[in-house]
Length: 171
Ligand SMILES: [Zn+2]
Image (tube, rainbow, N blue to C red; front, side, top):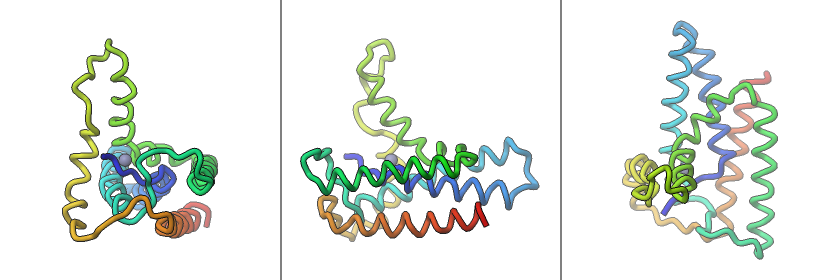
């Protein structure tokens, strides 16, 4: 089972990572800054996704008949687009922050086409691997991804991260 925090959260963290790396590690050449951003972006995914399993509202199936589910996700999509527009110069960090999703979901999409020979990729292998340390750390916490009030955790987390990103980049 894949528990994934909303893409907006990943993006904002990726933006903050790229900002910090490119501003505070300037002594390194540009290619090194890009690699460091990718590594930390990737690692941030391993921290954020397991939080989703414990603290957020993430019903495993899309529910288009539930007005709450629909409006929440609509809000997230709008937020994601706004974030991309205002922080487009941090695209490396944004992409780096969702590499595990690109790999696992990409493989899942490509599996339908025989030509890629991806029949063996029948599990989210990257997530299964990287999520393990954090899930072990939080093994005592019982999560309930169907509980609607848990959107609060993600809304608060996104708001705090967004405020931080805006202050860093625009002030
Ligand atoms: Zn993920």
